[in-house]
Length: 239
Image (cartoon, rainbow, N blue to C red):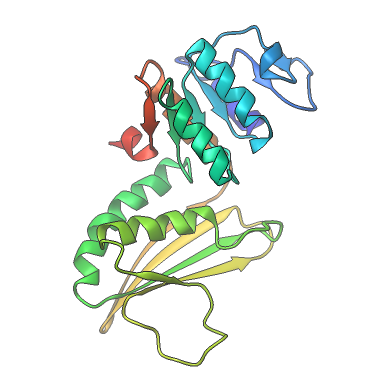
């Protein structure tokens, strides 16, 4: 993702990469690269983090000390990690989202309206997500975020069904089925199905490259620059 962000910003007239942090790679990429935030002597307007939780505490300390907002794209954060992020947001602006794609977040916005109308009209709700054969977690964080978005507007009245093979029974009215497909080099595909009596509505997003996540993160960084401390989401960015 660092390479994707660097590539996109080479032709961006509003922003540029001024430094990088990499645990193993320190080659100059047109900007200095450090192995630690503590070694970084470059001050930026925003930090974009697509790494791992390993340096989270260090990054938060650096951001708070220098009052630099963070676009936090790292996944796999523990409950304790999230507490640290929440504490840091009292001092710096932090934008955190399960998926940085502008398209996915627009889908979430559409789902809020669709769920309110269709759930009340007895439509069943199913989510199918597809990813490459190297992805180790299932369902995807984005699939869960889509389900949460729907359930939120339905006042958390639904439960999630991940596996129907263990029991023989009809689906329940208040369930959201979530299925995962793993194969080949699929970047990411998420489809929400509203199935009613004699009609079906499908809302689908397909990612053809990881560049969409870098583009969304850059979009978020431009939004976050200069913002007051607090927790922000991509829904704040797209309006």
